[in-house]
Length: 268
Image 1 (cartoon, rainbow, N blue to C red):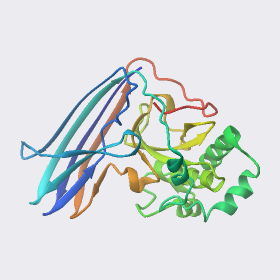
Image 2: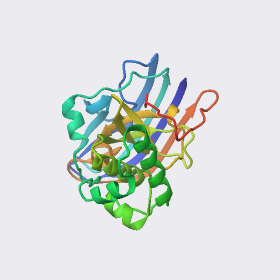
Image 3: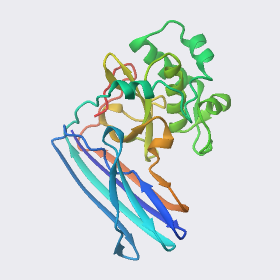
């Protein structure tokens, strides 16, 4: 499979701003090839940056701006083939079964046990995916950046990250390691960066997308972590910025795979 993705950003910073950006396809030794270009400029001049590695192949570009700046970013990548399945250490599996900032599994434990009883394994994954899909409405702009799984459940609406956070919290409540993964998602409409959940069962990570908005088999990992606090595509670690423009594309060369929500899929 050949997948072509791109991201174009324009953002403005104040003085003394430090930026961490995650828009590049995650590093994976299994791809037949990964060809990419990244341009970061201010007033037509290249911006120096350091590339930092994170969990699961994630790559963050770190930049510092001493003066107020208008920054233009242009990223393009072509990926041929499939990546190797992601593996996790025992410590990572412990981390991903704990409650986190946006996936408050401890607070949703009664809900999880009431709704999913003695379900385990594949049956549990499918039940959680279907329940979140049925209980929430996808409404663009309906949630705040501070909303977690509990707030999402109370409001019964949200965007992709909210759907994923709720699924993750419910799975962790049942002692299933689960994490949030940011992806490029060919077939997504409207096109944007997308967030899905991954759950560890049967010795492997399987992706579930409670929104059902894109086929999972063609998704490309960008980053993965406990929740969206680990996977934001643009964040500051000092100073502040305002995002002015964002355009994302993701396409498959040839026929797009059909989505079967009941199928176990490994993200690669």
